Image (tube, rainbow, N blue to C red; front, side, top):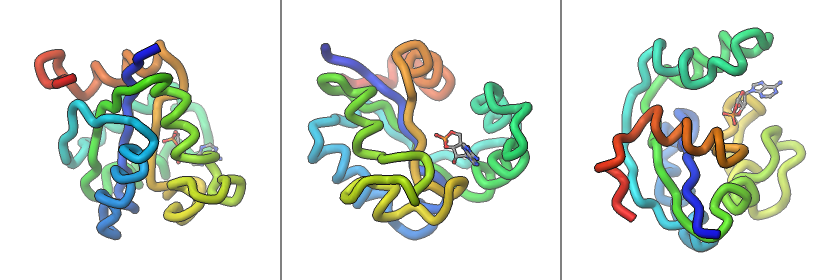
Amino acid sequence: ALERTFSIIKPDAVRRNLIGKIIAKFEEAGLRPIALKKIHMTRAQAEGFYAVHKERPFFGELVEQMIASPVVVQVLEGENAILKNREVMGATNPENAAEGTVRKEFALSIGENSVHGSDAPETAAEEIKFFFNDDELVG
Ligand code: CMP
């Protein structure tokens, strides 16, 4: 089915000028960016976005990394976009990521892992709404 998913190009990747190379991988996989913007997340945004992880030991470091410098937030549309995006990203820990994936090629560590992507339809809808209004989605 045609789906929409939410993607973040994280600070570590934006700092290393990898926006284009990462978007190219999404486009080559048939994912179409229908909304995108560069933002510098506030602490409140980062804490709210990652609230599901707030009891985890890495939460503080995660928030610090996400607000250290700008990110690119995107909505990607395509057939099975949620799973396809996860395949293009590769495993959360770059040590486990398959050849050719974004995280295998670009991630520095499990925390500075270059991209975030929604893991399921419900979270995709919530995450898109967290950063975009409906009139910003240009499908
Ligand atoms: P992301 O998809 O953005 O969702 C939560 C993030 O927490 C994850 O990618 C990682 O970058 C980060 N993180 C840091 N340490 C860990 C860990 N031990 N397990 C899972 N995620 C971690």
